[in-house]
Image (cartoon, rainbow, N blue to C red; front, side, top):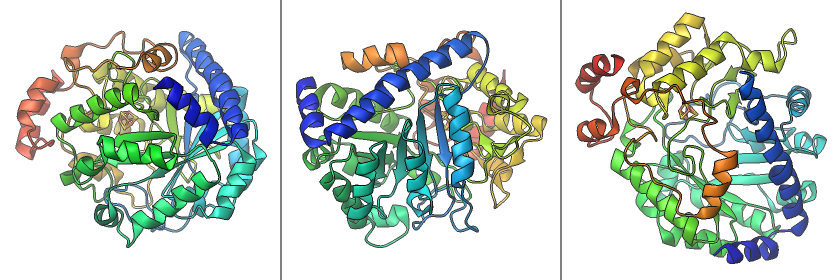
Length: 434
Ligand code: SF4
């Protein structure tokens, strides 16, 4: 299987792009994580993986989207991006996740990539703006991998993404990337309406046949003004996805990314470990894309980025998160997060101005943390890579499970439908606050 994967990479992708990826992400990316580890020993944080939402606008209207896509367009312009990237590079960073809105609606997106040939960019996109011409340009640049989201079959895609003919247009974008031999990924936010169609071997085989090199199965998070909690997976379904990913990694010649488990299958939160944080289109610095509260922004020249990532709000967020759960504090303890926001006077980072009310209305839900049900990576390669580069960096050493959210077995019993009801919420919160 590993040989097949190596063969695929060498034969199906432009070799120059593979070399760029190996040099920038393999070698320099690895060194950026080592620097992060050294900083952690001194109690300093600067995330080696920065996710930047460069624009709020989008051509689609996905269910459960938390970005103000219909609001007045806001972008992080070339100059601000270059400043941000230079400062991050000084800390040893090389990777930037580009998010939106739809990043390809940003008028200067390609200039950003061009201005920073020593960095590697992963663009989270719906793929619909990737024409053959744009894919050719990405191939010339060589430092970009498109990660294109597919949210279901033809019918489900239209329903999930609020427009017509979404699946075919997205598949066209993927094909344009593949025709130009780009290192191309496909991701899915797995929810109740697409789990059966996409979390299966047939879909993975189809991606391999097409020439897709990697995939990423996120778990749907119910956030935003219209959070669509009905789409949430049950705890059993979440476990099923985790098992599937681990098995496919050992079986199929395609890379599968995840951000929530170490090699032994123990859960972690990349924002709590300081491995990644997020910058919104207004420049606000947020712990992660779904925590839309800020005390600092990148446009303020009085402070360095390091100072901003080590602000009282960001530090206390990480500490609270580390002490509370190895999973997602937003899902498990929105009440604690709300208190943190209030204590620090963090501003609502949205245009709609309802992020606090949305947090108040959230119900307790299970996240990736599922003690007793850890699924170790079946693939020795992933186990090895994760042991050195992707784990909790010891930040959970003081973590006390009894202090954490609902123990997963208790929650599984309560949450047959993936959500605690309002009444259950009230019953549970006093218990988990002890
Ligand atoms: S807080 Fe939750 S959504 Fe944010 S990075 Fe952590 S686990 Fe993911």
